[in-house]
Amino acid sequence: MQVVRTIVWVLLVVALALFSIANWTPVSLRVWDGLVIDTMLPALVILAFALGFVPMWLLHRAAQWQAKRRIAALELAARPVPVPVAPPAPPPPAPPSLAPYPQSAEPAASPAEPAPPPSPTLGPDA
Image 1 (tube, rainbow, N blue to C red):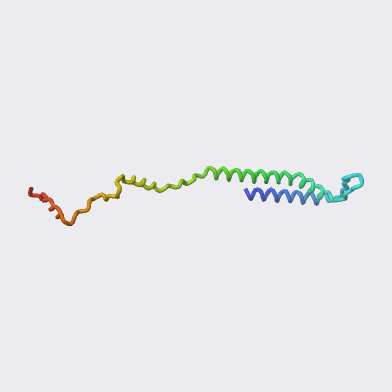
Image 2: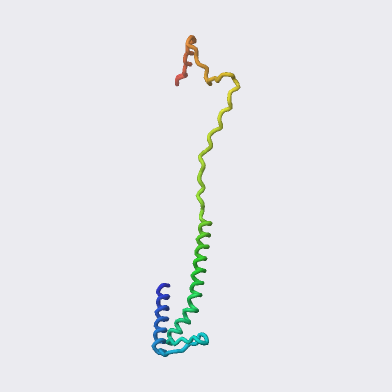
């Protein structure tokens, strides 16, 4: 696409150069009653071309800029957002005991009582 654009611009410049060479004649341009401008015809043609081209080119660039901004905003809105995974909640605290003093889960063995003997295990012969 860049090559085609360059070829078009080169052809336009060559056509303007050939037109300028063929029509290099002075022209009197009366702007107001007392204001007369003496210039060459190619300068007048280039000025008329610029007066028509530049505003439309600026309008095109502004529309292109606005479209790019809108597309970028839509792409940003369509991008999936990673959802952070929350760690599991800690277990709720145990309710307080109703006893006046805290008690342990296993009662402590008194030193006066001997430990119970281990139960006999049944072997493979039984």
